[in-house]
Length: 183
Image (cartoon, rainbow, N blue to C red; front, side, top):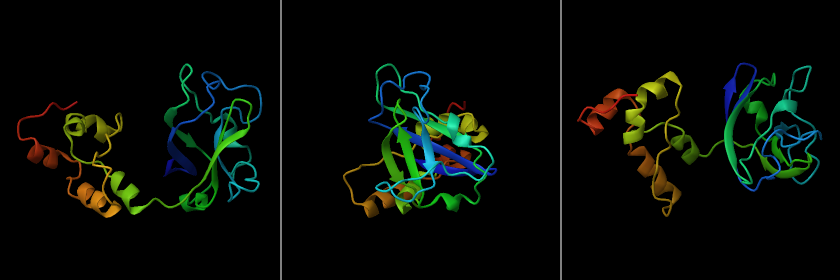
């Protein structure tokens, strides 16, 4: 899960596996059915407490995931007006995934991104990203993540990512001098 600030809340992006295949449509009637939420607790081993928010009503009650026809994986992005600012207030809290019955099936503690994760968050030049640079700049399309060999040390991976030019029109023109299709 990655998180970014929004006005008085958070936008988080997720890629989940090992989910409940029953969450392939609308959630059930049980509380927290197919839910994904930040909880107020700081431990996945003790009681994680209730949902974490600073508004009068719980904004997490409608935040759910959907699997596709029998699959147990999903990904997406959600914006939640939690009333919690700054974003650092979420650090140390737990991120909980619930099954169709509302039971907790996964938990992780929210931490600062690593240096490598921060590097990966910066859009890089690639044929696909340069082709779609206009849509990416407008926010109607997301930049494809940088690809690099995974069999290297973290330092080697970071150096490999740093050697890739940051995504912008000038760097695309240098990397691909033949006019590229702009979408």
